[in-house]
Length: 105
Image 1 (cartoon, rainbow, N blue to C red):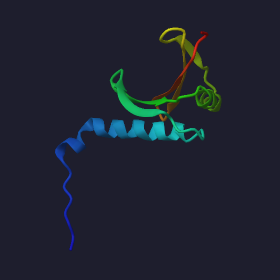
Image 2 (cartoon, rainbow, N blue to C red; image 1 turned 135 degrees about the horizontal axis):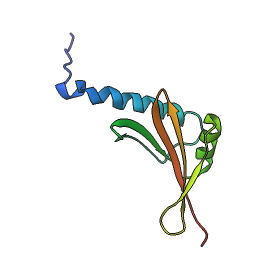
Image 3 (cartoon, rainbow, N blue to C red; image 1 turned 180 degrees about the vertical axis):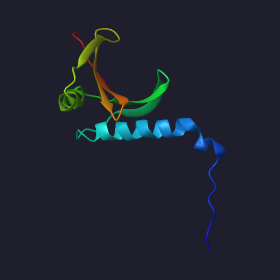
């Protein structure tokens, strides 16, 4: 017995393939470190899908930046916290790895 599987029309929407490519790029970057991200997402940014990796600790962000040879940026976050970020490109897709580091008390 076989069951025919039908694909809903919305699954064939053009943005689906862009989201899948961003998922693949995000997966590739996260595989470079042995630390599981706190949160992973793909979202539309500047009319293109991009990946987002949020880590609980800045160490994986630094490791990813070193692997890609990019600079880690530090920007103020809530209170005295600092946002650590590395922006890398995989097959033309931007993936942002970031963490928040506690600032001075």
